[in-house]
Amino acid sequence: MRLQLLSDLHLETEDFEPQPAPSAELLVLGGDIDSTWQGLARFRDWPVPVILVAGNHEFDNRELNTAWPALREHCAQLGIRLLERESAVITDRSGRRIRFVATVRWCDFNLFGERGREKAMRAAGYFMRVMRSTQHGEAFGAEAVREEALACRAWLADELARSPGDWNATVALTHFGPSLRSGDPRYGSQAGTASFCNADDDLLPLADVWIHGHLHCRHDYMAGTTRVVCNARGHARKGEADGYDGLFVVEV
Image 1 (cartoon, rainbow, N blue to C red):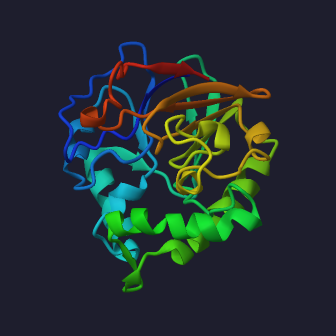
Image 2 (image 1 turned 60 degrees about the horizontal axis):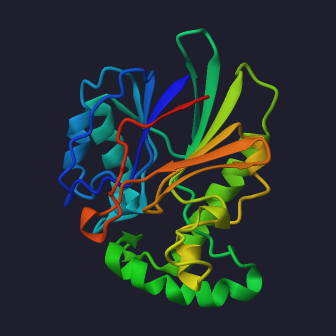
Image 3 (image 1 turned 180 degrees about the vertical axis):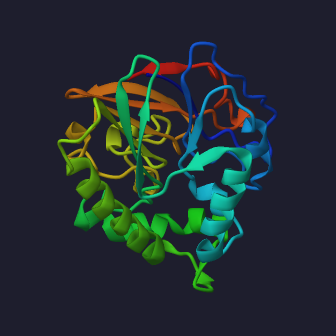
């Protein structure tokens, strides 16, 4: 199956017009498409099916408990399939069945182990203030993010381990990066990187391909037999969109 990958378009501020890749069979949106959700309408009537995993900025200035059902309904009206702690098996043109295992997979701040967690959570304060999200009426801070992240991790581990099944290949789809190897080289291994990547390296062998976003840079590397791919655009004003290929396709 040929997958067109787009993430971190930030259409709420960026001037970018997504175009269908001619050879793609499915469009995968890896989150942070538009914090206002308005830009999602650009994918209405897309020529191939569209699936989406939400990014953290899809919840900017929102209450998570009400945002989730509202986002799901909004996507459904546009013909976009939102997946959160859900799997979907999709058949490609050749008859191969591809399983997509998807969740935001919020950051649990364990990227540098337990000893680095407290420092990582302190560093996360800035990103939480940017989001200005709430959960149960309280600020969606680092502790709450970690709780959500651990629930995502538990679901993801269980679902990826479920086999055999009636599929030919498995694609893990998360917004947050699954490994320090997906870190942004501009910033290196600093505490703030734990707000962008998780230490899910032990789960990587359970997927044939792992797609993520969140990092405003591109990645395409092998972790054992697993291909890890990120095609995030980022902000043009910071030079992050330089050389971006909006028609990038990965084959599973």
